[in-house]
Length: 223
Image (cartoon, rainbow, N blue to C red):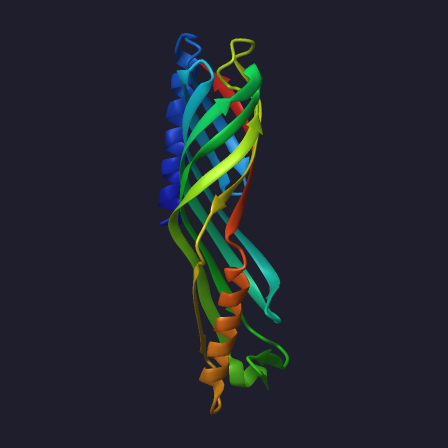
């Protein structure tokens, strides 16, 4: 699934860049390669009015991190980010400063896995590695989130055909869905109850984060 989505992303970007390179300069369209806290991706921008642009984008990223502590348990994380965005930019004060709003459709997942090599606390009880076995689960967010932000740079300016822009904003998200289970251990009496407490602690931790920060830098080509 990940390879298929990445292949689609690469195909879309290739088509847009090829179109941009082969079209005459109308000044009304631009394509961008983008890196952000949403992942790697691209955008297509068009002019709506002289000071208003609309853009659509796609982002994706697969990355792994080892030994990340969550609620006193060290997990290996497999992060899979995927999103689509529809945004409108208003260029205030006849400048390159912009105020942006729109929606971001997110389908993000973080896979969790822990193989303890020493006693760890789960819930309110310490367990040995043999009792725990392997902890595994996921943190998933699949939603359409409102977005608001600011930025600098207008890819449709007639001053140049290529350049850079940046964005700083937030997406207003809900709490993610958390799953957590164990396998391969002896799981003594009461273990399931303590594991449920750990799952609840992880849910409570992520409940605090209702704002997803979006920081992006884009390289654009206008055509």
